[in-house]
Amino acid sequence: WNEAVASQIDEVNAMTLATVNATGVPAARIVLLKGYNPDGFIFFTNYESDKGKNLAQNPHAALVFFWKELERQIRIEGTVEKVSAEESDRYFNSRPASSRIGAWASPQSAVIENRLVIEQNVERYSSIFANDSIERPDHWGGYIVKPTSIEFWQGRSSRLHDRIRYVLENSASWKVERLAP
Image 1 (cartoon, helix red, strand yellow):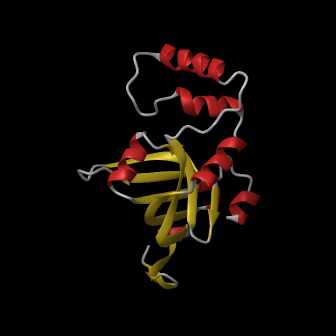
Image 2 (cartoon, rainbow, N blue to C red):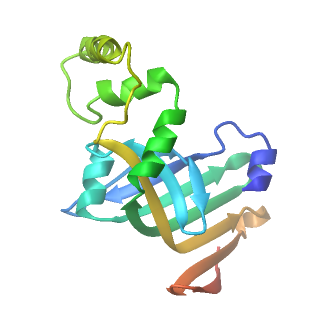
Image 3 (tube, rainbow, N blue to C red):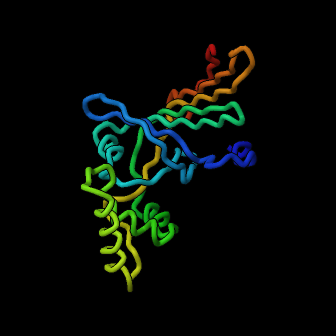
């Protein structure tokens, strides 16, 4: 992670998040890593979005970081839980006011008639919160992906890449495996 950050890659924290709905249909999209700790990898979103609905139905996900410039990829699979309301509040309050208004204004993933719907919602919530602090909506917050598998891929010539996978065997022990490229 530190090498990727030091390389000054644009949006080094951009990661693909893959989820699966209740009928087994997968979906993937880019989200931004906003934190990590010994328990896992944290991102924030609208709980009522497609990804939020998928995670409510099936609390398993995969993350992929791909840094072309370094010829590196990290794949993470794990279980997903919401972070605490306090952690969601803390991150929400660190965001610019326009982003906080956006969390209220956008019914993320819902079909809307046109762009005017969002613009009117922004005006409405900007007016509602004009003289007050912008509190976090109940439908918005964070998730933590608690890894059960992490694979590190390093590109090599002749497509003979290095692949090292860590698999969680119990709550505190990781088995290390080398995979064929």
